[in-house]
Image 1 (cartoon, one colour):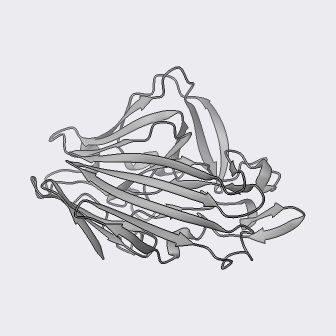
Image 2 (cartoon, rainbow, N blue to C red):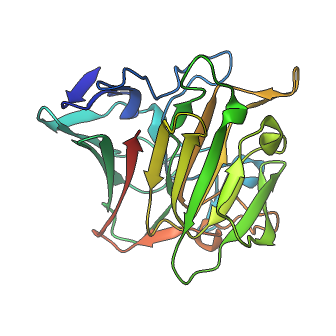
Image 3 (cartoon, rainbow, N blue to C red):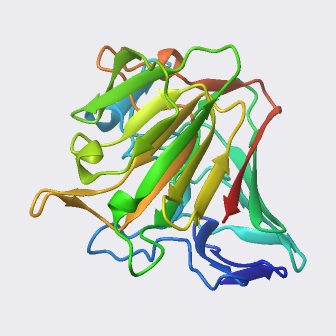
Length: 292
């Protein structure tokens, strides 16, 4: 486990998937990340690549060939190398080197960097196309935040607060059988009180959001996730049919891409929200989590 820290935060990151596993706030003593309890969901903050969400029938077509790939892709399960590390900063790299061509016919390099700045964690992604042709891909974050943070609270004591991108329409989407359906424009989206029923039908999904804060209405403890320029965001917790409650975490997931739509052609080049990189070029993005 790799550890970076400052006077505010201590962050533990696994080389498996370059996944943040723990964030402890030194000044208030709180642990903010989900524990990864497999009884609910065994991951904590996986990186989704080269797809986000599920493909229709878990397959896609590219240049007259059909490939199979499971939900969220494979990058979350590979072992990264540590490139550079300081007390407050660490960089991870993974090069595909032909190992996944049977399910994804491109070679790439993925660089993930984590930087602590006071009470915030900055996450930077860089994807390099190492092919002589254009590369098509999606990438997304999936951090799960523990709630409630205090023993005397329940999930109903928490709310989601939204800041939309300036001069852009916020669209809302829903999942049906793991496929995307557009619901329409989300008018006056500013705050949603947290309840288990929000996640009966899986994730809440929006476009053109710049920031979401998950915070207690009582203590104001919570997380502020800023992801300007990201086209989509998902909000998810695991709904338990057995008791009508959700798992004790909520994910706030900035995405460049999303699951297949109901009307997908199955062609990766035509996939809704897909990104493409010219040969030897790179894609870069970053988001920030503030722990309050």
